[in-house]
Amino acid sequence: MCDETLAIAGGSPVATESFPSPWLGPAEIGEEEVEAVAAVVRSKSLFRFLDHENSKCTQLENLFKGMTGCEHALAVGGGTAALICGLVGIGIGDGDEVIVPAFTYIASASAVLICGAVPVLAEIDESFTIDPEDIERKITPRTKAIMPVHMRGIPCDMDRILDVARRHNLLVIEDCAQACGGRYKGRALGSLGDVGCFSLQQYKVITAGEGGVIVTGRREVFERAAIRHDSAMCFWNPADTTIGPFPGENCRMNEMEGALGCVQFGRMAGILKRTRALYRRIHEGIADCPGIQPHRSPDPEGDCGIAVAVLLESGDRARRFAEALNAEGIPAASIYDRGIPDRHIYCYWEYVMEKRSSDAHGRPWTSPLHDVSRQYRPDMCPRTLDILGRAVIISLAQTFEDRHAEWIICGIRKVAQGVR
Ligand SMILES: Cc1ncc(COP(=O)(O)O)c(C=O)c1O
Image (cartoon, rainbow, N blue to C red; front, top):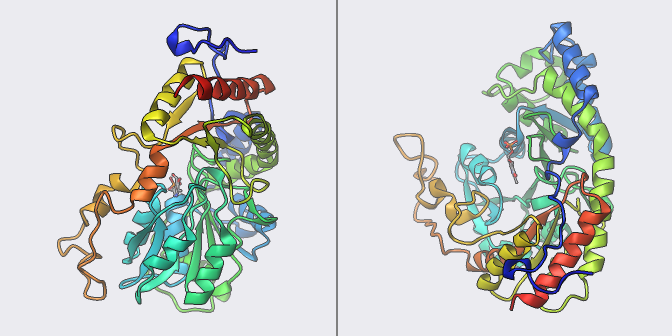
């Protein structure tokens, strides 16, 4: 039972101890990871194409093929690199528009720009993921692709997104950076669109320090992505390439990352089993709580379960709700409160809002193939700002014990009653 007086008003906090850190993959790093990396270093064979068949990067790619059922996988240097290579893989370039959600890490939009295309922003809905109806409103004759982003491990409403894509003949690139191991109606995220892109950076479900993986069922998408990821790709295994060479860069994964990624991959099922159990328990515990709207995932079963969110009726209440939860010892945060320039919210993407460029001619914004009159404004996606402003989010990690879940439930119920 909880003390009914809010801790923020002098009552006893619900949580009697601090929560463990919310790291996912990094919290699991142990001797196995250390040994795997050390073995690569000892071998002095750090470059994946020295022994392609036995390389750790190849092994990691095989694990991702197994997880997604996709015929092709490519390990790259990071999640942003995965998006860039994935976009090149599906043929995105100058003059193209890609519809991205207004709530995603800035890298999703940046990757589009790096390819010479421009991002067109679509609202999110109460799922915190891209709103399929707004995608349809944002389509123009230049639209070539949609980039659903499975934010905070929440699967997007892929049935509706794929339906829009089919009807308008658009390609789909899934940004799975935050949702490794997530599913939608039984299918692995990353395998539903034309190409799926993962990140193995520190904050993700599993980590290789840095790193990314692309998956696709389409041979020519894989080849184009692979050529982009290595300026000499066509030389490493010329027999493998059916399309001609074009300039690439070097965003290869190295063998140390590959080895770390393989060990972490083995930990993913355990991490997600635990986060999903916590997520289910907390949702059961707050389902009938008056005055809050628990977040509804497009597929609660497939959701990674790494965050629990509630929506309040106003931004003001959300801010006070988060403060009161913090006083109860629950690590909660409101998502958008105007003060914090969170790079996951489009209005803080200054180089998009101001159409900045690294080149003196202002490309890609100024390309004659683009609609150069397209403008971006911090208030252009009001629904996204409204939803994020009313949201309070709590990150979950496999390191949380049952009592942490009970404290979260008790804290939310207590604060829902005490903060009006
Ligand atoms: C949604 C999303 N997309 C893309 C990225 C880029 O990944 P990386 O940092 O590995 O380049 C991230 C993570 O940082 C992300 O959260």
